[in-house]
Length: 442
Image 1 (cartoon, one colour):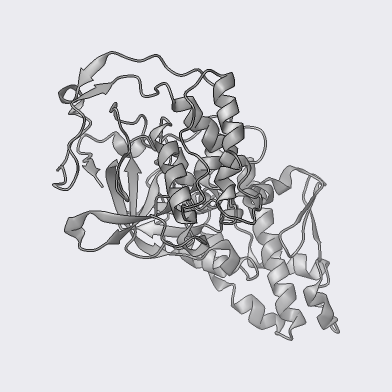
Image 2: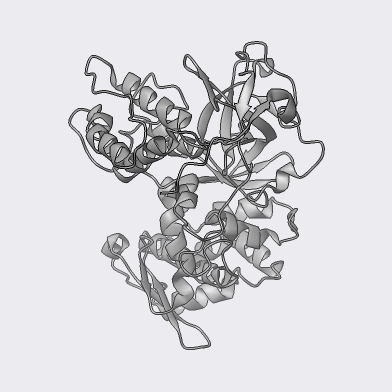
C-alpha cells in the first residue's frame, strides 16, 4: 500500500480554472474556496483499504445483504489502526436498509480515494439486485464480473490505462449532494450503433461481430485496420501473459484461430440439428468478404473453415444429434506443428501460445460487454445495457471512460451511470490533447 501523499500547499480555485472550464450548472453547489494540491489526504488509504477488501469479497455470500459491508468493518478498522490511519466512521446499523448501507459505503469510498476507480465496481443495470440505489452506488450483492477498471487496477507495474489523467485538486471530488453525484467531465460522443454482447453470439457463427466490423471504416482513427481494432476491442487490448497492454501482435494470430474454431463449433451444432452444409456456408458470406479485404490476414477464409470442418468430421453423414450437447474439441495444426484446441463452450485446451486470445476473452467476456460505435466513429466495448443514444464521457480522475444514459431533457445534463467502457485509441489521454476540449459538471 502506498503511503498517503503529504498535504500540499493551498491553492485557489482560480489557479486551476484552466481545468474547470465550461458552463457551471446552476444546481451545482458552490465549490470550496480553497483546494489542496495533494489529492490524497489523511483518510485516503482507509478508503482504499475498504475498496480493496470489498473487491476481494464481492463473490462472497451473506444471508443478510447488509453484512456484505458490515461483516468487513472489523477488518477494515483494525487495518486502519495498524497503519495509524483514520478509522472508518461506518457502523453496523441494522435499522438502515440495504440500499442505505450500500450508498453510505460507496460515498465513503469515493470521498476517501484519489480517483474514480470505485465507479468501475458499479454493476450493469441488468444485474442490479438492490432497488432504490443511485446509479453511482455499488450493489455489493450483485454477481461479480471483472470490469475494465478493476482489471486495470491490478496490473501492477504493467502499463495501464489513464484516459483522463489526474482529478481536479479540490477538497471534495467527486461532489456528492443528497443522492446526486457531480463529476467534471468531457463528453466524448454519443453511441450511434451497437453490436452484440458475447452471450448473444458465442453460440453462433460470430456473424454479428463480422457484420458490425463490416459497417466500420476500413481504417480507424489510429491508422489501424478495422480487423485489428475488432480483436483489440474485444479483449480491451489486454493480453493474458507477457506484455499485458497493449496486446502483442501475436494475439492477432491467436484471434484468427479462436475465430476459426468458434465458427466451426457453431457449424457443427447447426449440422447436428439437420442444417445443410451449403446453407451454413452461405450464411458466412460476410466473413469471406471481410477476409478478402483484410491486410492483416487475421480473418480465416471460408475454404479454411470448411477444411477444418472436413478434418474434424463435422460434415460426416449420420452424426449423432446428441453430440450437440457435448463439448467437442477441434484441432488445427499450423505450419510450425503447434496445436491449438478450443471446445464449443469456449473452454481452452492449449498446446501452444495460439490460445492467448481465447484466454484473454475468458477475463473480458465475464462482464458480457457490448460492442458499439459512436457518431464520431469511435469503437468501444461497454456495459451490456449500452444502447443507441447513450453517452461516453471522460471524467476527471477516471482512468477509464464511463458510459452514461441521459435522463430528462438534454439541458438538464442529468445521467444514469451504466458502468465503465473501453474506447479504442483514447485510453491514454489522447482525446484530451486537443485545445478545444470542453469540460462540464455532470
